Length: 495
Image 1 (cartoon, rainbow, N blue to C red):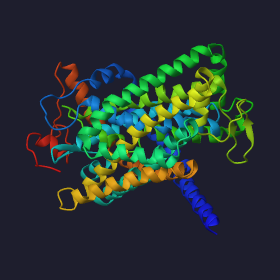
Image 2: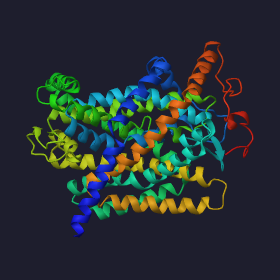
Image 3: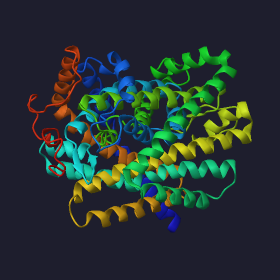
Image 4: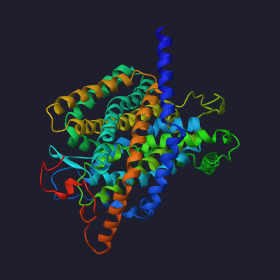
């Protein structure tokens, strides 16, 4: 009876995930990204050099807030996680090699969405207890003047980032260490929860310091490892590239019948990984200290590239070059491609097997376990900050705020431990529900507020052309509700 009930619950979770991630959301994400890219005249391409320059710039005049690089690192830590290792394997396993091409497409277009949402987060950020807070809840309330929808997003972010999404990350860590070092998931989950607690107690400053060291270092190291694997399999690279593009557009004889799944899994896993349009990136963007909102918009657009075009691609090409993947028709269960390594359903073993072809099977599992531990852990840190910001929005400046934050810390620590013991499918479905709900609310909001971001971009570029260091004046641009920028030197004036 208990087993039947458990199966029914997991089936219900899967059904809800499919409702949230209907084709309508896929179209909305792609359409919004294309729309913003056109309106900004593809700022993610023509201002690429400026993105890199701004990454290491910060407004030293302001003592409040974190640097642009720290905000980038925190956003990168939220983006680079199990989605880059396990998520890519899942996308290819159910969508074929072409899924990675659709991940590139959603990243390229999503960079336009990331620019708009991050710029809006800076425009409508507030100062709160010596920090900056921003994100969808704030720009929905201040920009759209729609308190109830802002509350909906805040609640969704607390539930999704504090409860639903952390188990996906800890689940990946637990599986990796169980298979590589035969460590029981409960032990891995307990240690992960303990270290997380030590970090998040220090607040955003400690999270940012850990993220700016760990996230970039692990991303570079992982990409370098992928390059070595590719060099060792250079002869098959042309066929890998051919399979990817033919599969992406339905021209591959083996995968042509699953084109819908190819697009859907590529977009879904792409958004889960790069978070463009999801609404979490702008939460971090709002914490940075800059002289003009567009600066942080460009930095966050760049972080989407790093996540998908570098880290996700590194995983994909390793799997494809070493043939360490299966492709399954998710509707019929038919196996369209079977790996020579006898792999099962898509999970972390795909990536560890690919690396194992170079280092040996056992070493491959250990390397991926360690990489996943760092990637997933920094992602959980970012999730906590997202959830905490939602809580601060709801309870800021009340006596309940501090107690609620401690409750949130206990909840996310418990969720991390719980996730290490659950099945991968249940964990991913819960995470997909959280991401999808937030994406629905946020994309609708930025589609209504985008003129403010476009106006700010034109203002930034106009000041640049006149030889000035761009500074933001919302009154000049007729932007209401940007209280911080109207009184930037008056602590406590807003928020």
